Image (cartoon, each protein chain N blue to C red):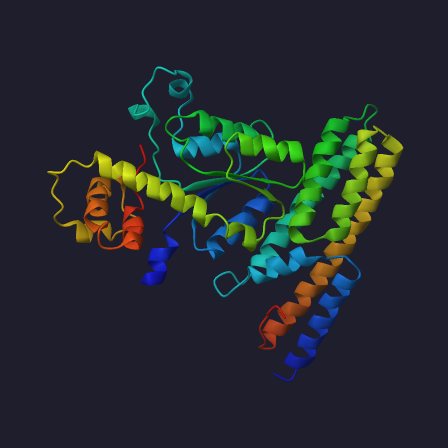
Length: 212
Length: 151
């Protein structure tokens, strides 16, 4: 039981054009008990996130535009730097310039130790820069970055939840971690209800919530 | 069961020789450590992908370098990929040969690049041969009732 809960706690989106490196990063992340989705390009990563270019390019569009909500909860993106067409840096920029997605931590991986590249990525908002080949010790550094956003999201959600919302029946709903999006409202209530009881439980229960 | 202990010894000795000859480095140990009961074929799977990918890149490099006008950008991109994947599986000597290769590519030196390509191929076939032998020994060990584990 406990194991299963921990396993689905964080969802990482891994982006790499090399099939070998995708296989490796997937295994590393799974060994560290994260849920993993791998894609082979930056554009597929954006597609997976539900990123809509037209909406993003229009700066007047509010961040809550229904066309550009995060469809699947992703707690962290880890991307290769050197990829054809869209580089990891390009992907990082798109994420950080997006009002809907900028809170997702991004980590860049590269086989080349180029200091100017590293500082450029960090300045643009990357949380970490890993030299390839990535090792288990690197992957273990990811958790604090995900906890940060999780906590921030929790606070956000608490503000959103109105005081008169019912919090009944959340025990059943919120325990189903992999539940589809229609369960999210209940999870949000669960978060509020449980927050006094256990910080750790709150975080876990919050898992699966769509960040808007 | 009588074959298990000699086979285990043989695998340990063989693997040690691959590290001593710098054919493999610590990254290969990392791969082995990521293999467990839930992923019993992880190393073989990743290494097989490396073989397929390398063969494709080497074929393309051979064709590209034999053109009248060499597209060095293409050559460099392919060598870069090969360098990355060899480093990811710990094929140290292939990786090193790729680093030298890229220097000749920067200089747009076709003759130097052709020599490097040959060197990369030699190193690639060496590590391929050695890993295939290692996997065969491991299969024999499993068939004899032993289990593969990282020492």
